[in-house]
Length: 261
Image 1 (cartoon, helix red, strand yellow):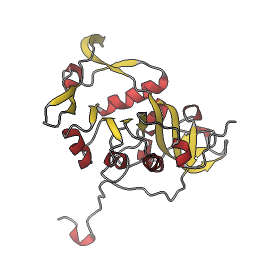
Image 2 (tube, one colour):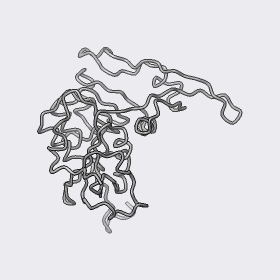
Image 3 (cartoon, helix red, strand yellow):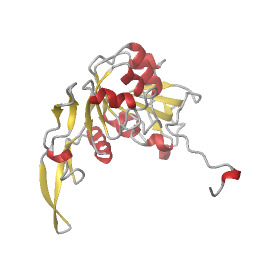
Image 4 (cartoon, one colour):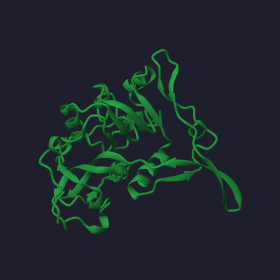
């Protein structure tokens, strides 16, 4: 059995070069591979093209790389929690490929499954299919780069002709993910919302690097509970169960004296 463990996050990301493409797991701040992100920040890697559902917040998750001007392009579905992201995009410093969330998930899954492209109804009749979505602005606010039109075809679905848009799969140089548990062979188990996008991002990377809270030996994980098999994972780093986890927006119930207001 191949032992895929690395002694530290820094060692695991050491060969990620400037200009690399990354698929990064996480849903909001849930499941962000923050130890790997911070190791990449410390290393100084720059000019990155990152695929992730969102870009964290200003001071956490991928937001720390964005603040340091390390990201050249983001491919995301939701960018509404990061003011620095908005500033860099509107000023022409950052390229953005805005992608519907379900489409982004499937593009990552397809890339990891050896599927070159697929047709979907999502985006038909919009700029997602027709082209023209701003990807990069000039500093004066005019559009420097716009999305190209995509191939649209008609398929018969249950006796009805419907239009579908062609979406290409995503494969990246590396992927960075966070898991609750993993074994030394790379089999991973995710927890709740952290399971969103982490397995898909892991599949899409030619080299997948996983940080895990708990590292065990092969055979200690229930095979029926494994969410991602080790065939997709190349490096594993144990970060411990006490690693900091943040919440974007904390929602609490009203106190007893405020009920019904």
